[in-house]
Each structure stands twice: as structure tokens, then as C-alpha cells.
Length: 267
Ligand code: ZN
Ligand code: FE
Ligand code: FE
Ligand code: ZN
Image (cartoon, rainbow, N blue to C red; front, side, top):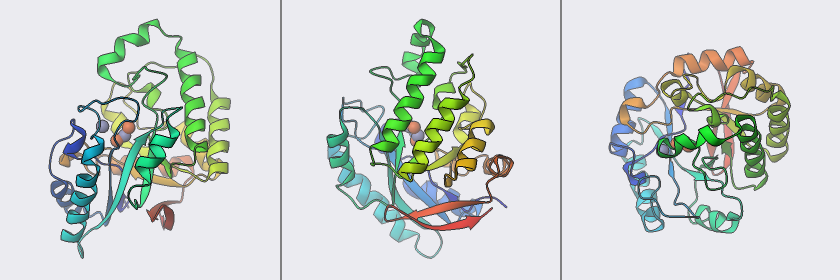
């Protein structure tokens, strides 16, 4: 059976997603999902880019917009109000301040930047050519650990996003992943299976099976997310995501409410 919950989707406020929240909800109902969570990109704290995140003045609009659709769908779909926030070292106080403004059901933490480099941004893709790929991977995992340790997040997003454009490490980085999983365990964060990677040059969900096995063995809770930026992508590839979860050893996934695990659901 497919998961009943899609915990990662966006809204037009981030400047690079389409559709109204009600259209995402409609699609979820059509697919037979019981629960969704909106996780639009929280305002950047280190710069302003209207094509990537909402700005700080739009945060109240975001919360109200999702509250409205939540009310509209009472009885047919449970809607959680959440947010995806970048981890930018040195800006923890500003990030915390933004996340404390509203009572989210959960907060997804993301690494999209290594220093100033948006390594998954198509506009900055050519910078990969100048990099030591293995070092980029190590830097990425270090940032993942730091982000979990910041205590700001409940679920870590797409935990091998660094592979998005198909740049693959040539060294065995299993120890990096194990170290990261251990930190996740100590910090009490969950990971997601994010199906969007299948439609990127990496052609794989995030994270890859080998990595997901390590998170499972370490006892990290799991969620599912399509990372939809279009209503048609809600719940996309969830059948395959369940197969991946089971292959990695998971027998359940979790739902969140008020920044805590609400309950687990059998796969
Ligand atoms: Zn996005
Ligand atoms: Fe992301
Ligand atoms: Fe996202
Ligand atoms: Zn994301």
C-alpha cells in the first residue's frame, strides 16, 4: 500500500512553483492520500531571491493561506502547516526567529548551499567543474550534521541532494553517512524519502538505497515527500518510494504534529 501522507510540497510564494494550495490538496484527495504537509521555502536569511523563497513579509500570507485550505478540506484531507528552511551556518539566530513566528507542525531542514555556492541551482551548475567532487560530498555531509545539531529541524530533506546533477563521489563515503546517521539519531530528527530526484539528472530518489539502509539501521524515523512544485506532482512515484523504504528495512513511517512525532503508520 502507498503511504497516506505526502510531507513535502511548495506553493507559488517561493517564486518557482505553480498552482494554488487547494489544487495540491485536490490532487492528494484524488490519489487517496489522507494527509499532506505544505513545506514552502522559508525566507532566506543570508540574501533575498524572489525566485527561490518567499520574503519575510509573505510569511503571514503563507501561514494564513495554508490555514484556509486546511479548513476548506476538513473531513476529506488532513493538512499540516510546515516549512522548509535552509541551514546557513552563522545565521542560526535569524533562522530560529523566523521559525518561531508560527506554530508549525514540523520544520524540514535543507542544505542547498555550500558556503555561497548553490550547488543544486541550475544557474550555478557549471561551478561543479572547478570542484573536487569528493570534497563537495564531505562538506555536504558536514553541513547536514551541523544542521541537525542546530536543533531547528524535525525532518532532514533530500539527504543526498548533492548528487542531483549526477556528479558522483569516487571515494567510498559510507563512513560519512554513518556518522551523519548517528548525529541524526542523537538529535532526534527524521529523514524523508524525496521522490523528486528521479526526475533530475541523478535519476534516483533521495537518498539512495545504500544510504537509506544506514538511516534505517540507525533507527531514524522516516517520512515521504514528493517535493511537488506543481499540483500534478503530489504523491508522485510513491509506489516506488514504498518499495525503496521496504528494501532499506523500514516497516513504518511517521506523522508529525506540533513539532513532534504524532504517530507511526505501518508500511
Ligand atoms: Zn523549490
Ligand atoms: Fe530542498
Ligand atoms: Fe522542497
Ligand atoms: Zn526541498
